[in-house]
Image (cartoon, rainbow, N blue to C red; front, side, top):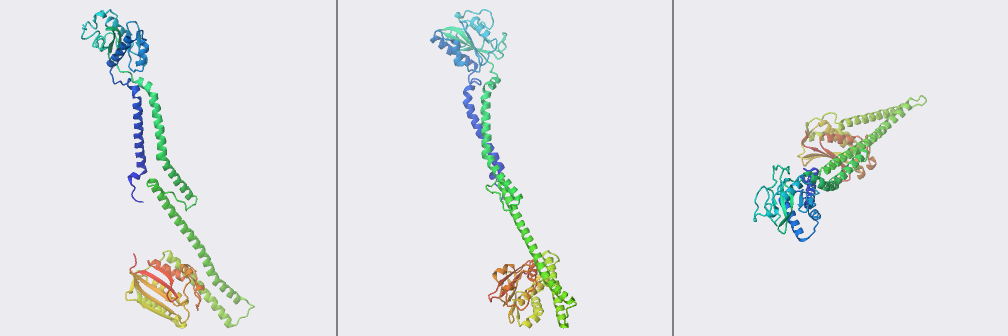
Length: 521
């Protein structure tokens, strides 16, 4: 698998997914906040206490002027009952209206009554309200209005009367007052403390709503994250887990899905590669086990045949009541000797094949002249080909001078091929040994004029004890042990080459060895 792209990473997808989810939640929370802003404007007001006092005073002034017998208490509570600022409204008819959502300071009502009836926060009688004098001996003329900056008819606030540090026990932050004026006469006063409302009021009033909204958004966000981010990953991991369990149970053909391009896909691909390797090894082990069983059966069969012959003839020779002439006895002893030699050859070939295939013994790295190999073939098989009138021809290309390898082993391989070809070539046939160069490889080719090899036997002729004599009729000599071509293959493979069998253009068999010109280190 190539380098993991960052935007396909599962971890980045989870991180970005949470960032996006958090952004969505913040946007939703913002909308909720905006929705609740209307309820919070009084808690965190955009207008000051002075503006609130002036607003209450102005509204009551208009309402009292328009409606005779107005229920001031009901009017104020209906219009300002949701205010998060404490306030007190005192009328000259003795009516006192106190905010019910936020309790005003304890002395605020007394201060408002003192402000209305005495012109101060105390109990001492103040100036005549009808003359327009009040507030710490200050003279409020026509331009200023009665009782402070608001003046008659304006409902304006006056913070001069009870500011911070008042000696009458007022609120620590001071008080804003506004006069309620009807027909140019002060009929009441509104007092609003400058101290902001306590934060616990917001928690008490808005906390349940905000908590419910937060929990709902949290549950929704968690559900979305689980469905969109984690559920697909969990499903794929579950499939991978099921595949791992199936593989552990012996189902070597199981594979995990490789959908996607993140870390889970990389893990699934690594698991599948492991499963394929395990399947390959399992199949190799099964094949090796079948080969071992077949080898044991073949060895048992091949060893049993000469042993049975030896035992039969020895028992015959040992019978006291069986009289054999000297010639018959000699023939029996010769058969026993031949079968014993055959048994020895089979055992020797088996040991040599096991040593070659197991990597036992080191191969020498000598310069091997091709002319020497061809000459040794001529000398070794001269008596056999002369007896059967078989022509043994050699052909060497100019470029095929030599190679690096173990001379004795290479000669053994070539001798086995020639012996096998002579064995399956009819009398007066021809066996040709050629040496040529093809693509930097030395090719040793052995052709015969025998009946060839049936195509179904070609893939198996290098197997141990495999004999295809039934497809190569016309032979004049019995077949060998069935290990010669297996030994040839083992020698060639140890030299880094290949060997293959086919049928030539003339119909006979062709076995071809390809060896590198320079042996690999």
